[in-house]
Length: 283
View (cartoon, rainbow, N blue to C red):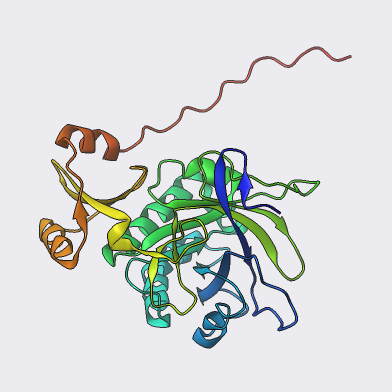
């Protein structure tokens, strides 16, 4: 696997339910997905996650798993899962990734899945954590307008030898294995250091940059938003006072025209269902 695919620089990643045995070589693994709360066979301990750093892992992505079968229960668990991740030790400014399994999104359907996605963004933004969502291709189509980082689960056969993150996504789990799943992530998206003390992004082969250097505050006619360098994701703040508090805490403001902020943060219109033409004649 390579760290550069096509025109976008990539971070090599792996994720696993359990801590990797000591004889497994993790050198060259930039990002490791770890489970910190929810319906999962193993919750990683802080000590397990911290020990990934000396083994060569540069960053981790904390993952939480809502109920995999009952959409109503999954929706009701979201705020509790965010709180559990924070109690585990996920610091302010770090990501929290929600693992939306196929069994959940297929039971929820499009409307239910979008409702879950909106609640994830609201719950994470309220406590200044970056929302991530991991899901399959169909669910990701439904969630296209949701302001969360997007980690696609899609395993082509044969497994690609030089994987690239597909357009419109921040990460791709391109292979599922008996011990580890294999991933690639875009550079510049938010992660957390293995010792869970620093939240930020990974520039190419360098130390993480604090979120105060990679996130900006912008103001629209309806209030303040936190955005990233690409102006792709906008997280609304709960009230105007939070903008002032974040500026005092070190966040920088980006002086954009109010009408531009309003346009970028406006809800995306729902996509019309595709119209299929007639089937070709047999033979």
